[in-house]
Length: 93
Image (cartoon, rainbow, N blue to C red; front, side, top):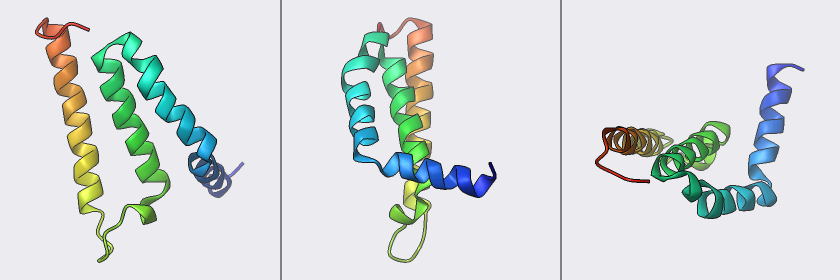
C-alpha cells in the first residue's frame, strides 16, 4: 500500500459521519473518566488529525492555514499546561 492509498483511506475515514460521532462520544463520555489530561490530549489529537487529513476545509478565503495552525498549537499548549499542572498536583483529575 503506497502513501496515496493510505491518505485516501484516512480522508474517507475522517469524513465518515459515524467516525465523527464516535470521536464526539469518546470525548464526551469516555475520556473524562481518565481525567483532564486525557480530554485535552484527545481533543488536540483529533483536531490535529482532522486538519492534517483535510487541510482544504480549514483554509481561509485567501488560502492561508495560519488560523488553523494557530488553533492546533494553542490546543497542544493547553494540553501541555493541563498535563504539567496535573503532574505538579495543582489540578486533580
